[in-house]
Image (cartoon, rainbow, N blue to C red; front, side, top):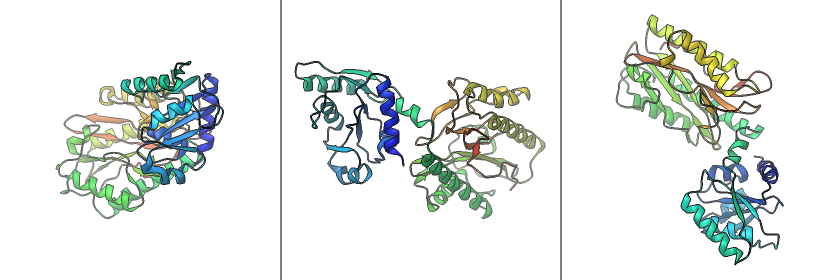
Length: 371
């Protein structure tokens, strides 16, 4: 992974904002910038390049392996220790006068403690100014590098293979419960190399399929019902996200009609993924297809979201979204039509925005599968 390159990108952002340092405390952002996967770690990134990684004694060996190229500070009070380091560098370098912090992550009490540590370290001198860099690292994370795209491809491949194996062996059959299917799908992803499911797997059959985020329960699969499966695998910390909807037995005309509508909307959404496209316009490309068929009120969520170290991250693609797509963004396209009391369909893929056609990472067929 290209951790040093990522730190340089954040360093450039900090310099542009007139900062001497950035204190990164959100663990996934720390992982993105350093590779560290422990439960306590923070990074003091300085614009002069004298970065310091902080953790506690439990992770000394792990930090030496995962973050070999950044100076290590071992202290149980990690954030406080890094704050003191910003004011009184052990290297004898200059004091950081303006320090960025992750305001979306640090609590109010945490901020007060940080201010207190800086004041004490300044010992009556000029106390460094704290300024928010809210979600600056997340903005960098929105565009994936080649290593990240490779991890996403592998995560999607695991999910594809697990579903294919489950269907081929007849595990999606009437009489089984949603919970049984969900647990077996999770187990197969794990056996194929996933670190964990990306989120709680959604298995929803019959009327439950009309609930967008139904949690699997003891409901039995029955002939003639929709079966909606929304799931993903985590590989090297990166998530996949895919939804497929099938019919158990012969599909009724209304089921084929709804499925065809969602498939058309999903195709329109995928086609709208282009460099520079406004995220609201991408949402509209799919939503307008559903609205034109009279089902606007049955599509109740955004079209998609970014995916990476988190299952939901920037950019958000929806009516309340903001911004434009860029090459390298990993996003989902997942329209749905949900008919309460009857059933629902969602079709979802994970894709990479490119300068040409978007790259499809979830390769399971989107033809209506009748099992």
